[in-house]
Length: 245
Image (cartoon, rainbow, N blue to C red):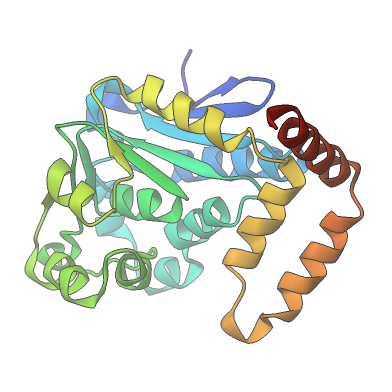
């Protein structure tokens, strides 16, 4: 199979493989377009997604050759920030499987996901200021939310690159595993044991702006209280408790 993004379909999940291993999966415009197409399908038919890079690297950044030629109007289009925000807003959870380097745009794609699993070789950072630009696709604000201001500034302003253990220690990585895909599918299995609509609404409520609470919480709960899934799951829970007495 060819193309900048390989899509592997399953009944309850989709695996998206960044497929430019010859350039360490640098994120270029065709890959951005392919990610938009994958997001559109996941918006139409919500499923959990796993994102992984081919060739032992998640993504070593945006395509520098393309970035060098971009100008003001290109930046204002939000080429990378737009697609990463779309990944962030997908209805169902997204798991980044981060092998090797996740730098620049690659790191920002990982930040946009709900979970991140790495390997012992994982390295995460944002070297953009060293190239005369900034981490404009989410790094300047998502990273602070994930790891706190002091560490985020070390990464964004002083060029610090986190090792797998350092990223795990600050919970930027949820897990470090030798068999990355197996670990990703185990986490996916755990997530997908939850009620599908409850997952979708929990993710939406979690990311709602502060001023929307508690209204959105109550509204989402009102929807879930009327579902057959809620009744069936609570009945099964009560039946199991009776049987254990």
